[in-house]
Each structure stands twice: as C-alpha cells, then as structure tokens.
Image (tube, rainbow, N blue to C red):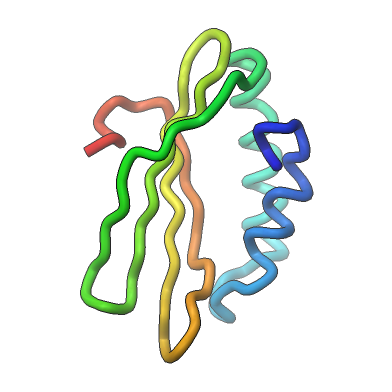
Length: 102
C-alpha cells in the first residue's frame, strides 16, 4: 500500500491485528508523518525487495525489506509476535542506514 502511495491505509491495515500493548493512537500518526516525509525526501517509490527473515525463538519474527525510491532507499523492519496460535503485528521501523541490512 505504501509503495502505491497509500501511506495511511498501509499502516491502518498493518496494525489491524496488533499486540494490545501498542499505543496505536500515538504510534500510527507518527509513523504516517515520518513515512510521508521520508518518501518526499527520497523521491517516487520504484519498487521493493525482500531482504531476509529472522526469528527469535518461536515467538518473534522480523522481516526486512528494502524500499527503493528514485533517489535513495529505506530499510524496513517489520516485527511480529506470536503469543499463542496466531501472529500479531508488533512494530515497524524504517531508516536509510546501510547497517540496518545486517
């Protein structure tokens, strides 16, 4: 959704099934604004690439993606938590640091 320009819808969808401890009222508007600013700085989104998947035990999952823009890239880390049978979104973080690909 974000690649298509729907920043608000993308975050709303990601956090639909999220951990109860997440302060969505504060976190989601902040992420939307930060993303809008980042995309403005780096130009039009031209694609994305899956980088890797990491697990911590059997309850935490991290997915890393590279969002490619016309002028630069951002590294996106999506976190999920599985307390019982299903995965819940636990957070999303992005930046333009090369070290984030580790």
